[in-house]
Image (cartoon, rainbow, N blue to C red):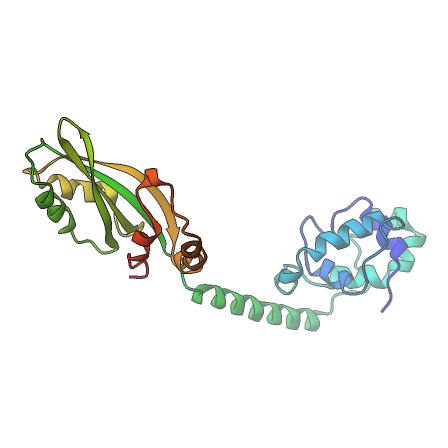
Length: 253
């Protein structure tokens, strides 16, 4: 089967696709019959060819059928000779009729491929969104037992919550606040709910605030940890979370 590039060039000079307004099997059919055209000779065809190439991974599942593409290819010579009439009537006249049996088979194959693609996509492991949080917990005064305060905070257990490193930071007048890091699974842990639980330790806790928060994704730490640990790189100190602390957290729990 041959294709008249001159006719295709003329056709695409006023259109983005062989048929309709989105890529379809008609474009794929014509695309497979030609090689990359010379842009200086066939600029519209070259533009169309480059665009359809970007859909290579989706060629098998693009909508539509190859019927329009087949009719265009087979009628290319006639289209070049009678372009004005063809442009006005090409979408209304079927020069060769429909091959219903071939179309039914093509639709069946396409449906099977789409089903296989959807099944593969459904079985792909879901990315678990997690966040590294720096929490600040303030006591009532300088006489508050900070160790008891920290023990109370760490006693809170929630699915998707992992406590990390902590430190005491002076805030003035001899009072220190607890700064503690934690990793949470975003879908399982509400920080508002966590802070409400912390507030229940009213003998020690005056208030709590989220000082910093950074999004992570499951598997990210395993990929970046080795090179970063070799260079000694750390997350900025103002976030109070260094890599050796993060390394001790079980991000895959």
